[in-house]
Every structure is written in structure tokens, then in C-alpha cells.
Amino acid sequence: MAEMIDDSLMVTMNGDLCPGEMKEEDSPQHEVKEDSQSSLIQLMSAVSIGKTSETNVMSIIDWEEYFMSIAYLVANRSKDPSTQVGACIVNQRKRIVGQGYNGMPRGCSDDEFPWKKVGPDLETKYFYVCHAEMNAIFNKNCDDISNCTIYTILFPCNQCTKTIIQSGISEVVYMCDKNKDKVEAIASMKMLDACNVRYRQLRPSWAGLNIDFKQGLCEIVKIGQSKSIPQPTTQQIDNTKKRQNCLPWDAYFLAISILVAKRSKCPEEQLGACIVNEEKRIVGQGYNGMPQNSRNVFPWRTDSKNILENKILYECHAELNAILNANLQVKGCKLYTITFPCNECAKAIIQSGIKEVIHLKKAEDKDTYVAAQIMFNAAKVTFRQHTPKDEMLYVDFSQIEL
Image (cartoon, rainbow, N blue to C red; front, side, top):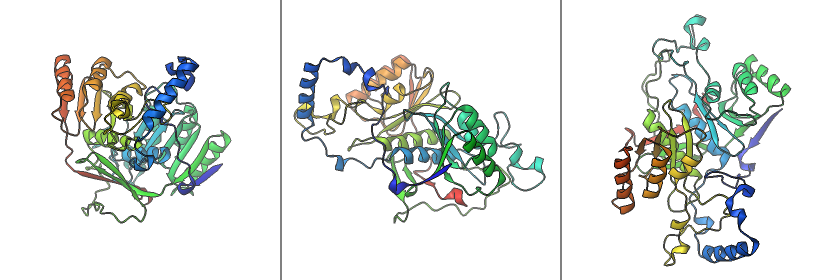
């Protein structure tokens, strides 16, 4: 049966699973003998003294908000002039394994197929458009999505529900149920109930996302928050033709990287990266964080005279995590990142076979970045800075209610 949850009652999911995401018992750390473990714990306890307090950590978006935010951001790629919908599929290890938005089938021209909602059946969009949920499933970056959760802006129609059930997805989390009284939605609920697929509505406490391409930052705009927000265009929209202002690919992947960074616990700088294959599918995402299963014992500070008390020796960068979190081969892929990679991440990028790096911010004039450029040039890995045309992107979570 349907479940409805209030975000104010939701418990934030802890235990980030960043690079590799092995279970504790699978980790090489568990090969340490007991006497060595106690010494290690004592050392880390000493190191963690004076580390940056959790209260100083930048705002971290919780898992549920993060996945639904991804769905809304993905929707910005849709060319549907009247309704933009996005969806993302998440496995039990909290990795995104599929993303999609509503659009025409592959090979069917957005200019030739109809987008209007009213008219003879064959001259409207309804017979042709592939919904976000279907596209997320067919865009999956792993072989099996059984027992996964799909986050979608709209409650799925009966056709998408069939695909969801047959793919093995075990839970549907949706934002808007404006079509709940239509026969398609009623049929969906009957099938989900009969097949024991859970579904629930997410009622978040935010109104939208402010993505700042200039600063490489993402801000959650709370409901009722007094904030200067870009106003929607007053230009008349032609709902019979494809949407012209959908987010360009480079800006879209950089926006994904900025949103991914909101999961980082780094108090100084939240960074994110994503890896994209030739079909423009995202195959890996990552943010900067400490090694998995480290139980928050490592320091985030950067100002200690004792190097063991600084984060530099412990932090895993976003680029490395994106590579290790990839569900498909990354050879020949592009990597999008907020900052230019350091020399250590450059090694991982080269060795993994990634062929192009697109970064938002200009590379700093430091040896670590100069070394990275030298290696990229020698290894024939291209790199370029991309500055989106618009400095700000506002993703309005209330738009779908219209």
C-alpha cells in the first residue's frame, strides 16, 4: 500500500559509501591483528583531537533529498515544452544506477514528432513520448536493478509501472501525484500492490535548488526561505514544438557534479565529479570524502603543524571516487569535475582509460596541477575548462504541480 512520509520526520541516512563501497568484512583493514588494531585506534583518537567539529561541516543534503534532487535536475534535459519529468534508480549501496527524462524514442526526431497535448491522437505526444521511468530503466549502467528504488517526480503511469515491476525494482518514491484520480494511476497502484512493490510520496522541506556555476556551489532553497531566485521567463512558450531552453550537455553534467558534491562532509570545500560514456550515460559519480568504514576518526582540518592531523593524507578526492563507483567500464569516457584534478587523481584518470576531462574552475598554478597537465599531455588525455552560458541555474521543485 502507499506510504506517505513527511520529510520533517525522516531520519537522515548515515554511513556514506564512497569509494569501492566494500562491506566491512571485505575490507583489507580487517586483516589487521587485534594488537595492531588497538594501536591504530589509539593513534587515530590522538589524530582526531582538534579535528573540525561536525557543527562546522558544510550543509549536507540527506540521501532521499539528494536522489529526488537528481531526478529534478535530470528533468532539465527534457525537450517536452509542457511537462519535464526526471527519474533516477538507486541500488541498495546508495549508488545511482540509472537516470532518465521524458523524451522521444532514440532515432525519432524531436523536430518531426508532435509535442502538443490536444488534437487527433496520432498528432499529439502521448503515443510517442517515452516517460522518465522507462528511460531510467533502459539507461541503467549495470546488468541487474533488482531490489533497487526508483525516485521519480511524478507517480508512474500504468505503462511505466509494468516496466518497473518487470525490471525487479522493489520501491517507488515519487514527489507529485497530481494524476492520482486517473485510471492509469489507479491501475498502477493495483499492480504495485498485487506485486508487493512499495510506493510512497516524499514531501521534502525544500522549494528548489540554486546551482551556482561561477562558484561551483549548490544551495538548497527551503520552503518559505527569503532568497533571491531567478524569475521564470515571461516569453510565450509554444507547447506544440520542442522545448528550446533545455540544459546543454556540458552544463548538465557539471550541474550533476555540483549536486553530487552536496553529499560531501568536507567543511572546507565540497567537490563532485561524474563520468560519462559515449552514449551520454552517467556511469560513475563521486564526491570528496574519507575512506569507507573509517568511522569519522580522520581529521578535516588543514592548519595543523602536525601533518598527521591534517586531511591531506586521508581524503579521497571526487575524481577517484567517481572512477571507483563506476558500474560500467570507464575506458574512453569523459570526466566532469568542479576543480582541475590533482596529480594523484590524474594518475587514476589516465590508468582507468578516461580520455577527456572537463573542469568548471580554472586550474590553480600549483605543482600538483602542473604535474597533472604534464601527464595528461603525455598520455593524450584532453582537458578543457567549460563555463556555462548562464551563471545560475534554479531548479524549481514546484513546477511539476502546475
